[in-house]
Image 1 (cartoon, rainbow, N blue to C red):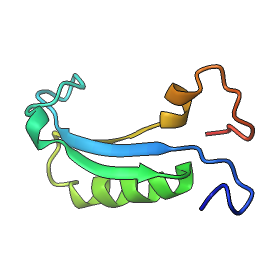
Image 2: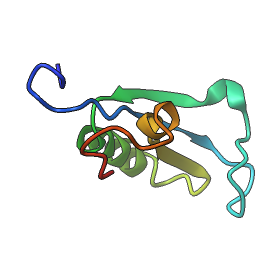
Image 3: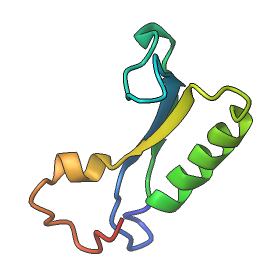
Length: 84
């Protein structure tokens, strides 16, 4: 996939759920987290995040996040092209 076309995989996780309070990042029910998926680059993760965020706009407590998994896997930043 990404490595085959010469691009380095920079994995991103998109997930969300309902928050207990608008002032925190504590989720109301961890069993109900929506794991949207893992994406090979930031652009595709952002597209998925936008779709989920826009679909849940009527619920002020619902939040979606993009997690830069590649930064957790390579905390020293050795991956070339790491701009996201």
